Image (cartoon, rainbow, N blue to C red):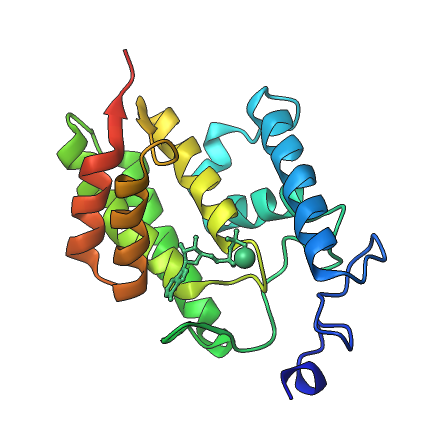
Length: 197
Ligand SMILES: Nc1ncnc2c1ncn2[C@@H]1O[C@H](COP(=O)(O)OP(=O)(O)O)[C@@H](O)[C@H]1O
Ligand SMILES: [Mg+2]
């Protein structure tokens, strides 16, 4: 049924894409390869954002665009359909203006804050990460884009968000997203932030 009402999908359920791939698994694989290469490209500075622009939702959109532009027409653009995952219904797209405004305030507060410890940074980032995940503004690729966005902010503040190499740590962050809980996310951030030497 969903394929008839979801304009992002082909008839067989695979997302429409610029690569003209019709097989869901092949698309997943190619998407992963391209996104990983784009992340590396990005990280070595070829397409760097300036720090001046980093602390705003528009940078998050820019990152999504950089990662997914070769694959989707809507890279870097907010979704126009409602979406859910498991039991979680994400924010209605009719509320994106409000959410963007609120997130920008939190991001600017973090930009201006003096961060002296992992706990300080986690207290700022917990609500930001939770809100970004609840907003889920893109039709696909929200997790990869927000993890890169938040990692860049951490780097700017002198910390590393070390999420990927410990399954249990990833699970704390993942469950905090599923529960949409600020306090749980603050604790997950405390477990995964490391001060750069
Ligand atoms: N049931 C859920 N409730 C809330 N958030 C979830 C749930 N399942 C996954 N997530 C979050 O959504 C992200 C996946 O969103 P998605 O748009 O598919 O991004 P990506 O394709 O980059 O993984 C995960 O990384 C996780 O942070
Ligand atoms: Mg996904």
